[in-house]
Length: 99
Image 1 (tube, one colour):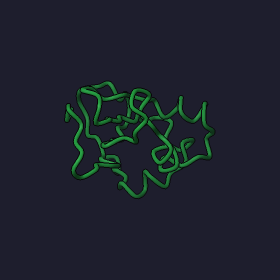
Image 2: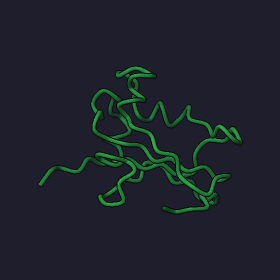
Image 3: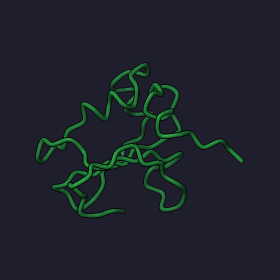
Image 4: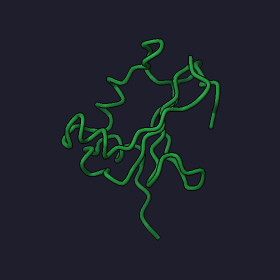
């Protein structure tokens, strides 16, 4: 059985170490999540950038606010099966779709 990383481990990991992971992000203004392949984020932002640094800078293209919820998922982030690790969940603001 593979070892499942903790939230802290994932957030401090460099994107280059997470090539097989996906990122799922919700904004309070949207009724659906956005999916990102971390491999692609590493190509665009650099493989040495941490996942936490990406989340801190991430903003919604529609309203400009930061995400209210974020999860990391090993493999295809669009897959309906498989466990996701909660990286961020803002209290008081909820995404419309808890997906």
